[in-house]
Image (cartoon, one colour):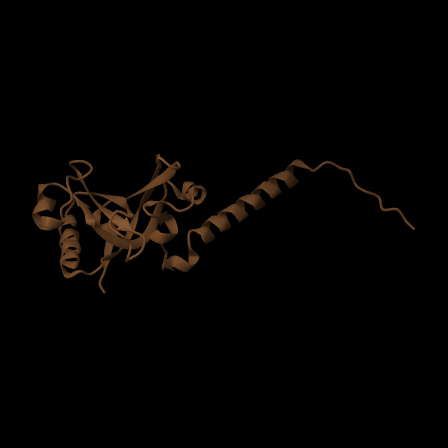
Length: 186
């Protein structure tokens, strides 16, 4: 019987660096998978892959994409449409209140078409030329009882959202203009 020689040479610095790089790639791949490859339409991820009841579905994955511009698709929460007096004139009974700032308007994005009002997260949009056309589309669908599917490119913002039960992570999407929101006609 021959004894095997065991090499006790310490791991070299570049080997450890390679291992960390490999682990980083695995974490990135898992994050992409958790963002719902099956919930993609083109390059856009579904709001359902990011959110559950208006809060982050997976805090660890969300923190990896926070601050980045992403494409998201979901459904307008017609019970949460906010803006200034001009928005109020268009929305009528569907107006929910003042916008977040004098220069922005807001709507909420539901993860699924059948989600209840309020199970959504906010999208803050600058008041620009495209606003009124979007609001008219939203309110036309709301009056007709149709859901409004939208595709949005924007920066994902996260924040602590403490609750009585457990701390949650809140979400907000910030497109740079109304042109970054596309209505899907059904």
